[in-house]
Length: 220
Image (tube, rainbow, N blue to C red; front, side):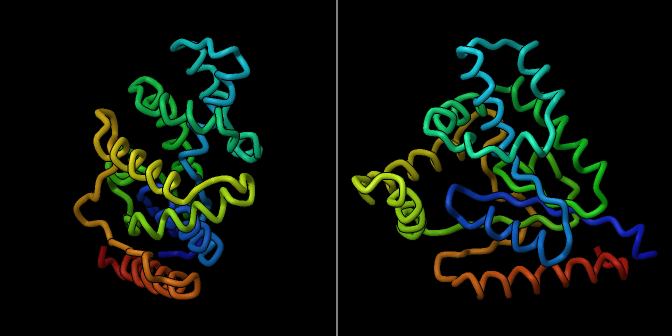
């Protein structure tokens, strides 16, 4: 197989603060993959809905989804509190997930080496991915990570509140009717609870390198 024609896809799933985004960035940088964080798609949609005075229907969603591009997903406004809350709500709607799925599938087609991270990637978006990775982490450790992030913005935030919010989000993601967070058959579990950044990078580098080598030699 010629190097220039080599195609490889990675589907990454995991709960909030499990390390999936950080891990995906490490992989993308280390191996030259094009990365898409699917959560940004829902955040961007939520941002547009808010700007449109929260008025939206199927046609509005289709129009926004059709004009999506990676540049539009780079704004810091995607992480505003109102955007975060609304994105979590609209992500449960079937027609919205369907509209954004088209963008993700197109992203895969346009790139030879691609990694997409989210919560329904291996089960719905990339069921035939060459490598599927599922990130997990203890709730207490996830709360510590998020608390450090939130504390920079709000000094009054309490770690118990952060932990409670994470538990609710995890329950919602795993039990929602549309595209729940699942550990699919064939996925590789990466528990980041006790991993340092250096250890996680070493584990992922070894994992991806092995999977790529296996495909090149026809072992996948």
